[in-house]
Length: 372
Ligand code: GLU
Image (cartoon, rainbow, N blue to C red; front, side):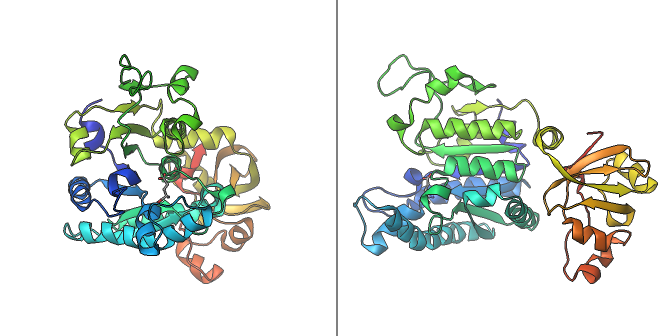
């Protein structure tokens, strides 16, 4: 992989592990390291790239202020530490990125948010909007409210889910693990770094060891994150984060392991829509809309004639022409009931009819597969 992999990424997610950010002994933030990575982030932002930070560290930072340093924490104590640590964590990013004139926005996510369709779309829209406004979202798991059953527990998979959710093209996992090795480099002097993985085979999975050996956030969770990314068309790197300016080091050809997907995010998303999603309704559209869809446009309310089925926002639906021919399949931005109310209207009338201002499109072209 070349330097351009990072500099040409449109939507880049940088995941920062606790061990890099917080000193184990004192519980204090490594401010000099944070200053350095924020320089990297500011440079990427100045290049016009969209940057998202997924960061750990809330629990580690929150220990000190609550007098919990050095103790083994129960789940509810971790959640309490996260509650006070999280605000300090985001504030640290804001204070540091302020020097570069960058606005930070905190988004806390639970597993539910990535699995429930409606919440998934809401989170995605918020992140899209923040990125359009040139803010840098700082994301962590919502540790204070997520219970054991609904936690990610590790930010590697959280970062991969976010990548999938916002169709990011590149995710870099910075931690004290600097890549995938053929064996454990701590015990095996012959262990070699694997520079590139195009398919997560059982052999590759075996290189992650067993979960009990590495615990949460270890190699195995990184490989699981890679699988999610590759399915979503996002390339992912496991890269060393301990040095100063780790992103710069990577751009300059530093060692790491790249996991490379076969397709781009848009194509991967479309094949997911075409292949695996069951449709819950049908929209019949007029000839003008059929032409527009075939020309790669979004479906607007003006072209909708009929709606059948009972579906929610985010559900998959079919689009047919007047004669019943199936034209496309896509994810609806509105519930069936709402489309019945706005069909035939111009997009700027949506707010008046529904009483709220939703999206201008019934199905956005990114969520639409023509001919499926
Ligand atoms: N969300 C946790 C925190 O901020 C960390 C999870 C992880 O390290 O992967 O402290």
